[in-house]
Amino acid sequence: MPPQAIIAKLVQRIPLTEDVYELQFRLIKPKKIAFIGGQFVTIKVEDGNPKLFFRSYSIMSPPSQNNIITTCIKLVPTGRATPWLTTVEEGTDMSMMGPLGKFVFHESKEKSSLFVATGTGITPLRCMLEDQLEKGNATNMHLIWGFRFEKDIFYTEELDKLHVKYPNFTYTVTVSRPSEEWKGSHGRVTDWLKENVKTPAQTQVYICGVGDMVTDTATLCEEIGIAREDVHFEKYA
Image 1 (cartoon, helix red, strand yellow):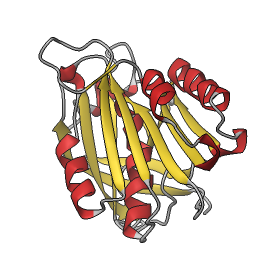
Image 2 (cartoon, helix red, strand yellow):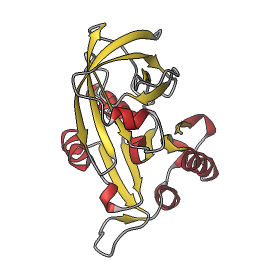
Image 3 (cartoon, rainbow, N blue to C red):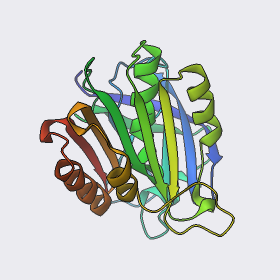
Image 4 (tube, rainbow, N blue to C red):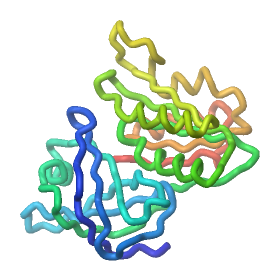
């Protein structure tokens, strides 16, 4: 799908943690867009700075919701885009361009799918997951999602509902610096992969997060036997 100019209204900004927010936009022009799960839009930052600036954000809402765009952002106080996006008034119209990107799902009836994220890297993966599940994909899909601390965790209620509705989807949250009270998985996502990927030849993987995590995870996936062509990833700056 060729990218197009988009005008969308920020209708809601939902705080998820102390520095993570969900942004919901309603399309104004055009009224609807077609996109593939995993793609992104580029938002024009209009913060009063005369220097033109754009920032890309993955779409989290599934393609079936073609009149809205939802994304998830982490506040970077030293950046330019997120301080604006976390303070701009709801109801503001924004200029975007999209859809863009080639980080998309590759359907396979023979292979299970493993989704690996840290933090807001969940954004395109959740879009892929919901899209495939809505379409009736009945292959096994598992999300392994890493955080540093328990206070950083979000969206578990939504993922629980998704699992109840689609039992072929499961997920694990792992915490690398847990408190003594944490009863879930411990360690990095790479630790989980080393211990739990039992059929690498029958597994395809989708990875999203900050650069080093993505590079390390992609390298590990190949080392444990997942074919290079089955390792797909998107790096966040």
